[in-house]
Image (cartoon, rainbow, N blue to C red; front, side, top):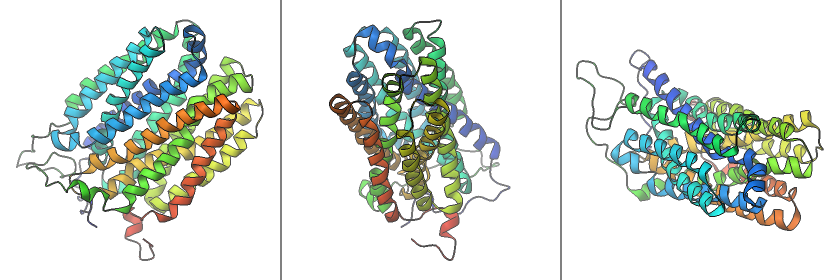
Length: 427
């Protein structure tokens, strides 16, 4: 089947590498802020529970609400930037979730927080597929996995790597409410820079200085495939299913690890911040490294590596007691492979399965299904499991998601450009 990316890459002399670098850098920073604004609530959970009289189940619901609205928005608005342009979608969404993140600091109880986080999910759900599409279009095809992995790796680095360290250190000097306001401010600055950098949809390059089509907006509207054609490639349905499994594995762990470390393993808040940061630093390496590796070994093999090794190291984490170095290493490795799956599936796998003119639509459908069920429903189930069996039981749910995902990977169709051109490839 022909996809929106089944075209010959421009020659090395025609490709605007500077424009590619600038676009990818800004979108990488912006998606890092998406992660920070979304996940800073997890290391703040122990303090917020005490201050607002919440429960661990309530915190899971707050995180799940954002995941569900993110997923619904991604599915319903994923095609928006295909119609009106990337810039007109990205900038308002970036401003919206930054302001709503700051508003979380004014919450007086569960209901206020729930409304703020749910609305924030709508903005982030609109931002994600448009940003992935913009990165894919700015990237030279042989660097697509590398660039999309880099962009999405910032989500883990900022949200789950720097986030716990920033939160636990700032709590020594300011109230948790101020932290929400501080982490929201950079988004407004980035919104201005992205507006100035990305070309609006109607603009075209001067005839005397043509640029590669993948880096410039088309002079005429692209003929879009029908919505039904989005599902013609089997990787779309498989992408939705495997992303659900990956998100079940990683988001249940990300939401509950701080409470698990403090309440079950009885670590100090500072120790908790150090260990929890392994999720972000491991995720950063994995979200960048696994898609980049897939440019060489193929998307299908990389997915199998991510699910398999993610499950192995999560099992080792589950068997580790209150030993900070070992907890950090096993969590770093498990979440590195698991987070790598998120960027692999929503990045190059989604991009290479998309029909013409439906890149953002395809990414939105895959992201949306994963968020609604893996980032939303799975967290609700995790809260129920914790209430019935205790905090350690949520680790079994996370492990189960990775194991099921591993069983689905053999059915993925290989789409990596290098592997598709190999004489010994198997589709």
